[in-house]
Image 1 (cartoon, rainbow, N blue to C red):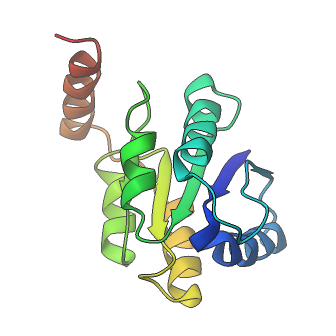
Image 2: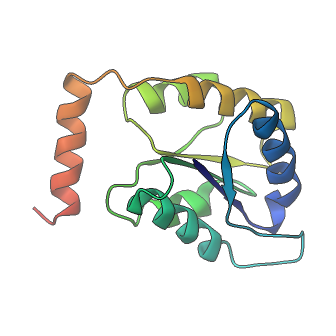
Image 3: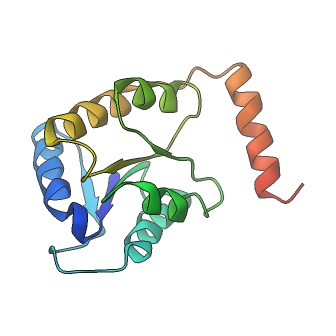
Length: 146
């Protein structure tokens, strides 16, 4: 199950991405927002991050105008590794090197075809482990305040 959420700036992009991912056979849980009326993005970023953190959803996708705000919010949650991706390389690296469990994109920065491409690469990416796992272990220690 993939959690998905957006603010008003990315509502249309979220809806188009949802349609595409459902056509690809993915199961989604939409955490809002539900229109292009102005909303507070932290509410939606937190809802998706909580769903991933709790294990309710295996991964998440967040969209806002730039992707920056959603990244900041999602990364406040222990165990969440939200990656702001703006091209194929960052999408692949975020999975291979960082085992990112939330993909974040900016709807005012990317075209819809780029959003689909980045999501495809990210969803098919695999974590490489090895030295990258050692680094994730270090991040987990930082989350614990050590």
